[in-house]
Image (tube, rainbow over the protein chains, first blue to last red):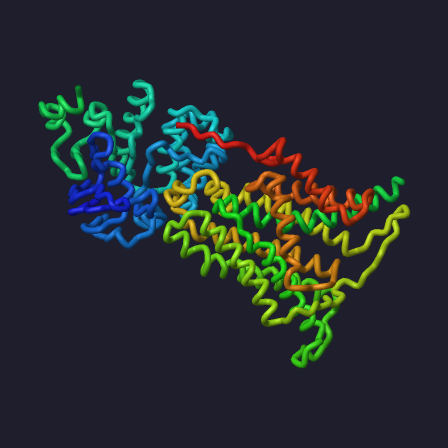
Length: 239
Length: 309
């Protein structure tokens, strides 16, 4: 279980999170909703332990995963040792590497060759477009394909919990549906998922539970169905 | 006429090899850290000096020596390998004590570049302090043999230098294309933030880069000292500057660029010196390169980056 308690973080002098607490159970799919600047990406950066300038400085609170304190871990250990991966906002795929190299580089710390071979197959089954473009440079892919690659890459790093930052951003509605369908499929197969979204509608459709962040604080939480029918949410996020 | 052209061609290949080997270090470090490591020319000098002490020791010129004489080829081999290893340690040490603390504090790149300049000056003047200003002559490691091929004079040293450089090229390309560490090096140059998200420790990649760059500068140092056997503390300064220019001409951050830039600079210098008074060599050579850069500022292989949203 990923457990965040009373998390306070700063970017420079700006307090980006002011006492955020939430948890994601093993095998769950949880959505983190909120407007721009509410602190959603900041929360994910904090969990990944990314150093400044990208990540914030934690001033108070705790982040634990399966009971292990993550605050003292380095970002590569959060991935390789603790098993939490991030699909960052804007994808951040390596444009100068081929699609296959992008996937391969994610297996850097893994030793389980047999499982790696299976995982490649899995990624190419989930995203046949990536198989077609295997030897193309990453920067020749369309936005949607880049998002698939970013997700495939997180999967290839062998983590059992994936955090996603605005996966639907800039994608056509159909592609968005397809990506969330794949997310649900991964989740059903056992991967824990925490997804940050501005598109509350699609996130609430697929997630089990959700939290709403506003100005660095959690202001609402509940099951996805509950939140989807909440009049305030409907007004603010579902228009 | 053709003979003298071919002779110059060969000299240019050798001269360009030194530039190429040093330019690589600039280019690799720039690719990974976006840092112009101005201490790199002095790493070349450190390499030459380490080779000097190793070689004189192995040749039994100190009080403490092996009781038996080593065969010359073995002395050469051991000197090259040990010099590369020890110089790599110096490069990594500089990264550790000078650059890494700045990186941890998130200092702007300008400060790191200034730090690099200072490190270079410290290496030069530290050398001056401990070893004195007098020049040292490098022992003859490869007994000089000159072959005469079609009227051209080809020394064995020249052949070794050129072949070593070509081997380095093939080896480096393989490392960077095929190994995961090499992939990580390329990945960092494109998107540094995403690299740790792949479970890759940034510091490991950075240290590996400094090991590669420094050991290649050391290789250049040994070979240079064999070809031009006079060592002095400032020998790395000008050569370093020129190799840096070569790296930029080739397109900094690109391995092919460092090689091509190095050879290009070697050719321009040698051929200018062949047909003009040699005092004008640098003036003419760098004017040519200046014009080249003003036409293609990104260098031969450099490309302007585009990011997709």
